[in-house]
Length: 236
Image (cartoon, rainbow, N blue to C red):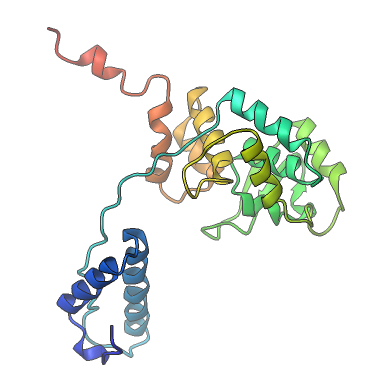
């Protein structure tokens, strides 16, 4: 923004700045984050009493982004993936992927899981994206595997397994949208949960979403989703 004085910033100059970022080739999502971060700066200054005017970024709405397709693995792809994982030299990757797939956890939540957070037949995730901890029940078989896998205190998976998982995905011949490499396990859990008749509100709690809108992205895979269109639509 050419280092302007704060009092000179107007909504029009913010809109111009946003347009220039887009013309530089930045993605709309990145530009939305630009504006959100700068809006937050002024919000904090207002809260601290250091800024007494309006927030010049407040009136600029985020660019609407097309909803991304949430890919999930079929039963056949899951089988092919785990066949490749079992062949990996990384002794942690299969169990990490299993825990992600069984609980809908993010890869980072499992990779940095502490052993003492696996207890009483549950796993508790504390270093979550929204900062809220959540506990998810485990099958007895998976619980026993986790308890026997590593130390009872400290990191359960001390070695990074991301590259090993990437190799397994590639070797299994699975093609995924950009940015969904490990996240596909979370999407797969959620999609199969709903396809098997699970409840959206329960899924929201398992995934740790703050709003039901995030969880609603999986509603379209429900077996009865929008069947009312056939039942109650006009007859002709």
